[in-house]
Length: 398
Ligand code: GLU
Image 1 (spheres, rainbow, N blue to C red):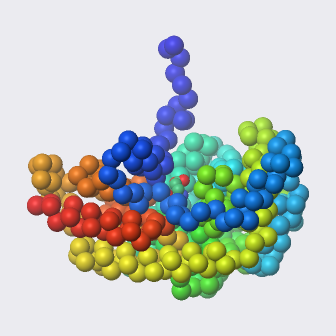
Image 2 (tube, helix red, strand yellow):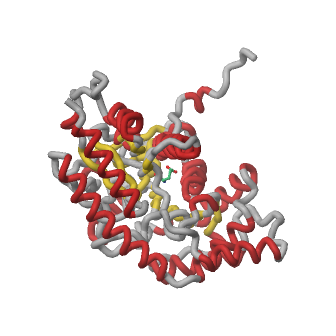
Image 3 (cartoon, rainbow, N blue to C red):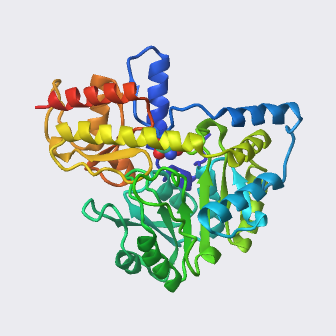
């Protein structure tokens, strides 16, 4: 066949977080000695009430099509969660259940982007944002933040990045990969600019429960924001449901309608069974979340202290999520025992995987080649092994 395939698709990069996770899991399946802090995938099991609800749903015959937007009960439960936990009002008709938060971001961007529209993305960013924007015909406008500013976007930087073509900003709070978490006051400053510039906000809040020293606040909880904010969330991280692929968009009514239409054509709806599982997740108390939060806080402190022992630059303790984004550029230019020169984060991570069997993600995937990302949503033993391998690998560089 000689006909060219989609140019738009050829121009997007594969997800490096997904690629590294897939590769590490395959290496482990092949019997190789690999320790993976690649993907952000909680090591806890899906809580029992959720598994039981899914089994019941299957046995009750909830195995047929649902409406494209999802079943009413779960959309009501999401609306109730947003009202009671986040003080934001979205009607059940404004909620669309999706196949995970990534799919919810895709839906939101697909509903908003016209060719050439600019989408502001603070950097470091989650790998997927710029690629989805490009895929859908938009232009990602990357706005760099610095470690000194806690990797946070300022209202001034946002204002300066806005042009006549700006359609939306993607805010990820808490942030993957940096763990930066905006305070209510900081978010209020950004919300003011978003309203002033009359742009949309896609607020990815998938790590909302994992904040260590600030209270979480939704970007939609400010005057003028609900009518322009699409809240994205999912159950993968909060309820250890990565493989279930279930999340949602909460969107202003006209956008919710369009997302429902997109979904009706693209996937019909997320799994009926997973929707009942999500309903059970929303009905549970938060004791499992509190347990995870305590474990992640302890693991965060462990990782920061261990990585600080080997990395000369200051390592910033993340305020939220479960990733450590550590600076490693002082090792660039050094040679591996086999004589290869480490040019950047991709080469460093390849070297660590090959020589030490340690899977971590290069900062280049997140727009910052000076750093590497560790996921500490892994057992204490795995973290300990990972730190030993990281230290040994870096100490072997000359
Ligand atoms: N969101 C997780 C991560 O960043 C899972 C992999 C992915 O979807 O990117 O590691």
